[in-house]
Structure formats: C-alpha cells, structure tokens
Length: 285
Image 1 (tube, rainbow, N blue to C red):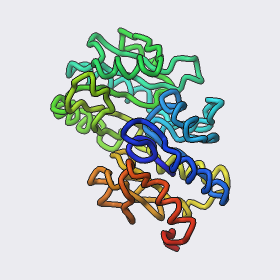
Image 2 (tube, rainbow, N blue to C red):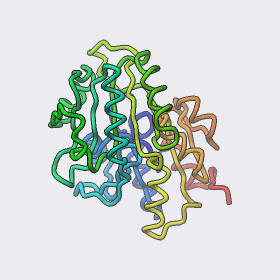
Image 3 (cartoon, rainbow, N blue to C red):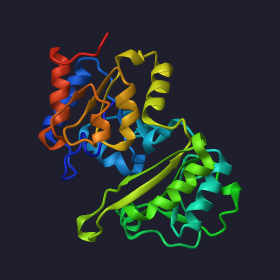
C-alpha cells in the first residue's frame, strides 16, 4: 500500500521517473501495487495516470475502493445517515461550511454543500481545480439526501476546530472517526495553518479497506507493506506487517513505523521498493 501526497508524489505535485520505474519493477516481480489516499478518485486520477497505474485504488481515506480508470465502486464503507446528519448539524452550529462526500455511483452526486455558511476559500479552490460540481442542500434536516455518505468534512483555520472537535467526540464517542489535519493548499492563496476536519464511520480507514481487498482477492494480509506519511496513514502503518514512514512523515506516523524511508522529495518510495526487491528490507515472518 502506497500513499500519494507526501509519499509517492513530490512536493511539486509530480510523480518522478524514478518512482514510476520502481512501481513498474514491483509489478514485474508480481507485487500488487495498491494506492491508498485521502483523495477521491476524481482528485487523484491524473496522478494515477502519471504513475502508470491501473486497477483498484483505496480512496477517501479508506471509505471507497475504486477501479481505475473505469471509476466503478468495488467496495465502500458508508456512514450511518443519522450520524452523518447530526455531525453536519454540529459543524453548522459552530459556523462552518460543511461538505458531504458521497458515492457518485448511486445518483451522480459526489459533493454536497450543507447549511447556511459558505465554504472556505481553500475548499472553493480545491473543487475548482478538480472540476467538481458541488450541489447545495440548504435543509440539513433532509436526511433522505444523506445516503451513501462516505465523509462529512469542513475546512477552516486550525484553531477553529477545538470546540467542534470536542462536540463531535462527546456526541459520538466510538461511533465515528473524527480528526483534523493540515489541508493541501495553493500557496498563492496565502492561507496559513488551514486544516481539514473529517468525520467517517469508525471502521473506515485504509487498513480496513486493504484487509477487505485482500480477503476478496485471496491475498495474504500478513504480506502487506504500507508506506505513508500523514494522519490517515497511522493505522495502516501501525497494523501492517511492515509499516514504513516517509522521512517527512508526521511524528505520529514515524512513532508507529517499523522503518523510516528517505524524504518523498528524495524518491523514498523507489528506495523502499528496491530494498524490498533486493531483500535489504523484509516483511517480518
């Protein structure tokens, strides 16, 4: 399992020739290369093409497994509709613009904007960049529209999330997975310390989806190698038989990793793949 941003992808947004060649070597040796990202398929398809990859991709932080390039859903982990509605209401009550991510395979609607508060400028930039059509739903009490929900989210300055985070945790406990972390932004926007808050079903994570894929395809999860850098990689790097943190990884990822790779801008993924192929790095038996 290989993460995209901060792992396979360089800081300039590219997948280098060295990383592409290493991915090809891994596949030539019969290794399944499974990308697992916090992005949706529409947000990562150009990177998958640049990497020369096809097949299943774990998207949206582990809540949806998508076939690339066909964009069909292979598996998904939905939120309970009433928890999704209540989470959205809590974020609206704290003055946040709320984004709902849905499986577009059901009715073609992927993103909903909920409530009276406008989306953050970084959200608007992100959706414009990827050509998203964001549908507006003013009445957040319309739980009927909150089916096939993969994620509830909001974007704001990092200091904004203390109160809503506490409210979500107090309300749901272990009935939802809640976190916030630094959002990807265009430096030209001039926004510092902008964070993305995400709410998922508690079972939705990259490790769960990789396990489900292994079970469906007769692969041994005891052979999984996970390479990542961010908060949504903590569980899979900790649980995988060989968990690798990038040199640039969040300290929480490094703390649970079995191995630390070079920085993503130094083609750390390619170096890990070559170490696996030569036997310099091995999955613990």
